[in-house]
Image 1 (spheres, rainbow, N blue to C red):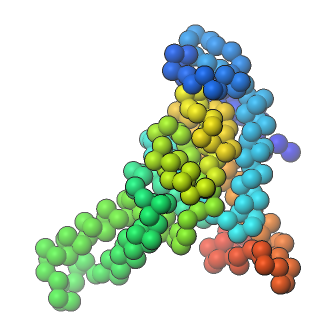
Image 2 (tube, helix red, strand yellow):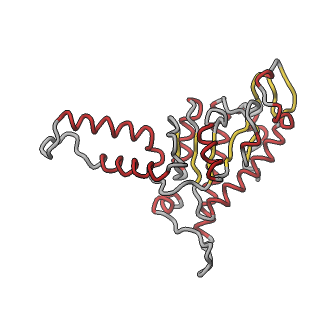
Image 3 (cartoon, rainbow, N blue to C red):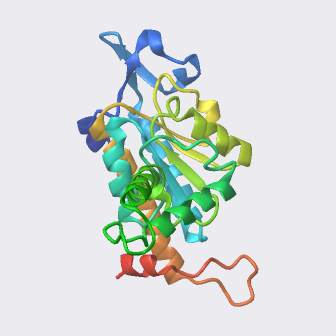
Length: 253
């Protein structure tokens, strides 16, 4: 059974690209036609690329990997948070924090600081902090939650990243490239396919399109978790998968 259908993609507007003057010539092979000054994406090719991306994500997670979901534009924020949360994966749906991948040890330090502040009782002034100090700490925690809340359980750099709007998320793309982290992303008609290891030709501006494709990637993660759970590696295998975390066991019931 197909993970998604042409009808679902049509209904979600996955086939609508950008205005013809805003295109990247490298995506020519993914364009079916032009209508009213808008490039129309070939959904048959989208379907084939979805299958490849789905298989990659599923197998990556089955082997113990983690997928970082990235999408900071308004159209993506809700689906990125909800779908990543549904399958227990880290996500960034606010501003990308420079160095999140390339300076990960520093990020780990900020995560520790966030968790430390979460233990503070901001209503209790008997522990040596003044009201002003507690207010400053509360504001610091709010900022940390906004920038790092989605990656609170990330303990190492991800195995791959899922990106909505490759042009907008160029910092994330650049950091992933420097570290050799594979990128799975929506390839709209203004983007460069050479920067994406697993491109999915599609519309990265419409909420329904973004939601549909992000759900497909999350479904691949979920299937990978099931495989990881059902097929533990043989004893003594040096490439054994990591054991399931508590939250993963909860997802699997």
